Length: 241
Image (cartoon, rainbow, N blue to C red; front, side, top):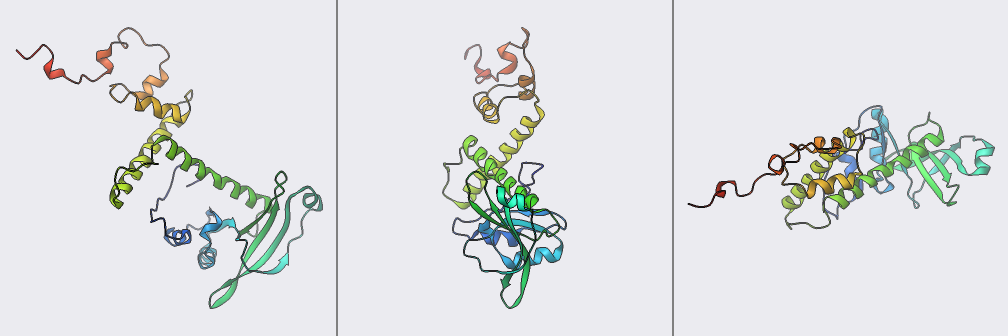
């Protein structure tokens, strides 16, 4: 998902037992782009290949990872004392049957929670805090997941088969994309969840939803139910004889 779009660019479905790191092999990297992902997708071979292709990455380093510090990058003493970035180092990560790969390790202390976080990246020319802020924006995809699950009933599946589950997920993703476009186009709009709820309870109304949201006061003709609601038993109007 791109940070400037807030909608998925690529969707890959797999079984729950599939390791997350397998996904990186399915992602075609683009030169010059920065990929930010969770530490569950750790794969040094893929990191090394991306570096050779000119693509950048920023992720967390696993707590049990082994690495060798090649050199330390000097930092500002005031920043170190006040929290934030406390270490900036060039490290070597092991590769099977190959020379170790170079990477950048940034140790960050949360000024509020005092928690230590370790970020690894191949962006050697960027400021350390830029990489930290890039990773912080990764949480926008968690907001997307929450938005889909709360508004499109993906906590229950109507079919146990693989194709049935995929179909329901795709329907939810398409609906989320449509409502995201509507939400962006409406300048004076309700919350995202409110828009979805309004459509859900008015599915029998024959009226443009965008017009409905933009119209503050309806005139008499617009309030005519026959103009906005589809008749269910039109053929039986007037009786059977």
